[in-house]
Length: 126
Image 1: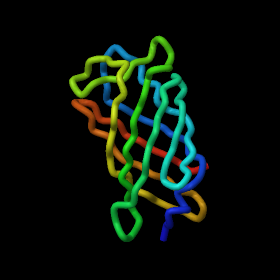
Image 2: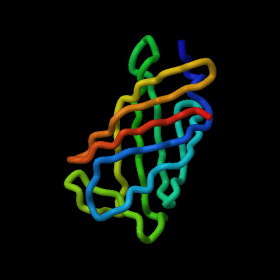
Image 3: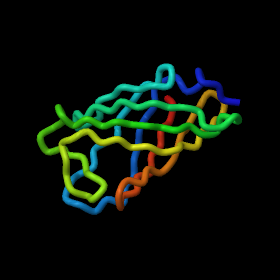
Image 4: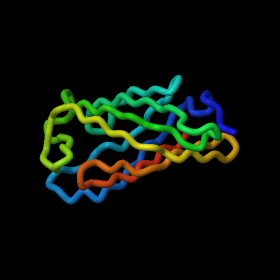
């Protein structure tokens, strides 16, 4: 069984999106979970603060809440509102991630539905 401390560590963050708009999605990168929280700056300079909370007693799912702040991101980087329009404002994303483990490897995967966009998120513990 996975414990809270098992989530602590450095993760590769990869996304796949069905977004078909004018903006280039640049949210992949690396993050470190410490005590169920992360702070990271992605490849575009957008700041992400996330929390991870267990949602089941068997510890196979976590609720992830991420706040993205593009205030100091690259000049060509914007987030999107639920209606798909670009924004330089903070955006909050929430989802439930499935947690899988093999020996000391941990992977969390899930879908973020935001407006008409679906993002498949995969986080792999290095």
